[in-house]
Length: 150
Image (cartoon, rainbow, N blue to C red):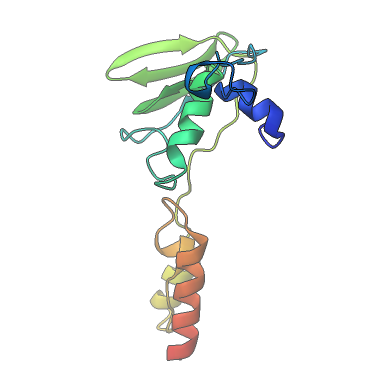
């Protein structure tokens, strides 16, 4: 909907007829059809890694749509009662019927370790090197630099 200019202006309170003071109108925000909770393990602000010029608008749009954002969550378990989490030492259950997990990556270094143990040369790059905050640009750069060095 935000790709449609008229919808965008209504949702953000832009008065294209200039009837309101300063060209502003009361924003028309859709009522969310469900509750959404966005939790992350990191204690930093949710979305802190987003672009400096666009991150704020993504977080604002999530707030406008009623998304609950929580940093520093530990995922304990999922059962019929919902998602069990601990935040700031307090355990709670979020009653949910759907859970989508985007919980990060762990580096897979088994082959690298096996090659080193066998006395073979190996190079560690990309997600096998640092899987947290997996960055395709970094991985491509490391692969290019390694290929040029070989």
